[in-house]
Length: 537
Ligand SMILES: Nc1ncnc2c1ncn2[C@@H]1O[C@H](COP(=O)(O)OP(=O)(O)O)[C@@H](O)[C@H]1O
Ligand SMILES: O=C(CO)[C@@H](O)[C@H](O)COP(=O)(O)O
Image 1 (cartoon, rainbow, N blue to C red):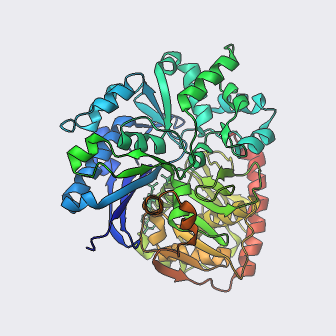
Image 2 (cartoon, rainbow, N blue to C red):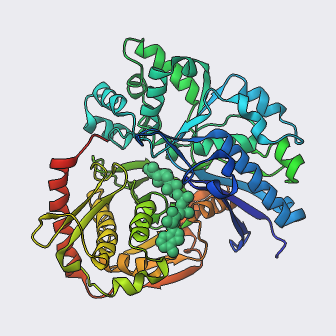
Image 3 (tube, protein in one colour):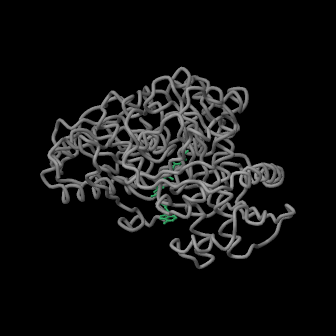
């Protein structure tokens, strides 16, 4: 191992806490992860979460995340030993939208945390153990109210970059304020998952960053400050909206630029694990903005992240505020934006269909070879949970070549149908959000757990008719944290970094017209489903 300084990136995502360490030349030094279901089974999560019986309320325990942070640092200390002292800076990210509710005891407990204790002893520092996360869809009433408060969904999208979405933090906070007044009263500070992890590292509650703050329906992405009307729109009915907004803005604190240095590592981490006291911590952000940094995505790149959720995103100086996706403040380019759409039914739906057909991922390529592009005009929409993009109720919707709905497909057709429709939806949504990918310049960067599957990558290249790249570091969001830590406050340098060691480049096959036709058909059938099976998200 070279003896240069090291940089640590963390990612607290839905199913795991990941760490990536790079050196001064951006070489990968270490990549590890703590899996919540497997390594912390005492918290009894499924895919990292707890779901209510009807599936609408989805939370993760804050003490699970605390235990995961300790476990990860134990592993880092065991592996790196004295080299842990070489970590000069840390940054990172978390799954977006999830909220953490600190109580008045938090600051004191964080300050007084002794290195002979474990982070889990902070449990009394929270007004609520269960943190609502991005999979939650129980805030329909609050979403309606928020949109009404600003004069409709178009206005909310023009201010905050997104119409109201169930999972966005504003409606989640509003629901707790309304249904659990005592909990809300007890809450002195509110963090996002990203700023929560940064707070634990620094030993004090630190601000939310602008990029992840854009996923709350509370931040004006143009003025880059909390929007008073939106804050008011979260007030429980019959309460004083102005007073509520003032108090909520205090609980949230002032948002900071994503490239801010927010402090240095706390006494707890330096004493317990051996990090240098001078190790600085940069603001944490959302996992998708962090991936944009990790992949050093330029204007011509479109990123597909295939994790628990699937997301598609890109950089833009010229945002298209629309009802079909999100505009976030760009994580490292001043005055720019990031366009994104999120698909709730990503890897877990692919897994469900694969398992139901008794297939292994290794053999998917062989099965796909039994059918051809466009699947003889069979097209399906597969949603285990109510989908976000498009807002269609859970269910499997299959259409034959005559666009008639049918109950089943043969196994070969089924597997191609789920994959083709998932990837076509990403093409369609990227275009709706204003991505102008150009055939001569464009490229698709694929990341997330499913990006190791070459058959999936080939299908993506074909659907987009663009070359697909993956990089040799599997966790691009955590890598983004490490790169952001490496570049310190001059994050604009991230965009001039060459794409981190390319692992694969896959060229498209000549099926461009086929998928162009299929994308129009997807549009048509999606519209039909919206009429018949939509719900409000
Ligand atoms: N070879 C593979 N082919 C397809 N999907 C895969 C493969 N390996 C892992 N996955 C999927 O990756 C998912 C986890 O992705 P990851 O990006 O780590 O999720 P998250 O960041 O949300 O925790 C798993 O749910 C699994 O379905
Ligand atoms: O809700 C969103 C983005 O808007 C999700 O993408 C979350 O950020 C969860 O990320 P993963 O754990 O699936 O990576």
